[in-house]
Length: 419
Image (cartoon, rainbow, N blue to C red):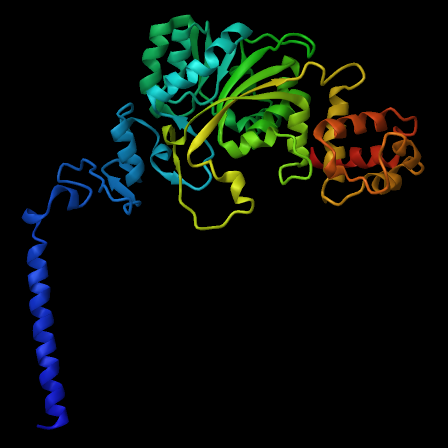
């Protein structure tokens, strides 16, 4: 037998065997013989039955419902909301969520038990950011909070909120805004002479900084820009007429760490220092991340300082922030506060920036005065705590040459450029 004939014979035998095995394997996959746990995630009635395996993590479409299979299953298992009556954004996985909603009633009760007593004792109006289905709202009202100003932009949630408005009457009102977009709303009002901010905060009395706080804001905070926006508004924009404000926030542990004053750390940055200087902060507790939607998407990208974010997918931190009564005074005005922020931005771009050489460039001869305050030629801005940086700026501001220094001119120019 020739080599060619042997090759053809072996090829025919291989094809026949492969075809037979394929047919046999296909018969093993008859739908009638598949166990429920092995079936595809959707049955004929389009009810979602997600495979128990963790391998299924994909976007699906079921009629009007579009979202991530795992997320939809988690919501159905929870049973507190109808997946057909919530915004589609809650059904997805997002790498960096711009807003988060609490969609678990039991977690809402836990959150209310953490913050309700403090809110009641403060006895000032309560503004709730992105109320969602109102689970937390109702728990706070049940606990004795006298009145809540809700804010919610998504109409899908009104199906849950309208019965609450009827049930609690004058104790509850709804403004149709996403207050996490505070900076955009203020800019819009300034650009077209609008009154959205007045709509949101209508009914709340204005106050001076040295008086008791004017309001309490409750918010689930997915990122830091909202905190920066509130702070800046309290100093130089619409909220500046309301004096001091208390915030109860639910946020990622990595954001909570922003309020830990640790010199020479990766979080020791100008805006974070400004927050620490202006607010007293306290962590009140934690809640499961799985109760907040949308979920975070899985990412293979390695993040710097990975330890900082290690708890973000497991839990959320509950915090109380209150603007410090002694932050502003006759000797340190709102204008001075803005100058302090730009002082930090100017001199903390690099960790190795040294205090005396840097300030000597702007105010020649100041080195001797700084040495009297226990600084030396090697002292760096980044090694000072937030409070020490605040005191340093106050010392510099008290000097006679400060107002005429190039430092002030430089900051004025920067302020004009950024505003």
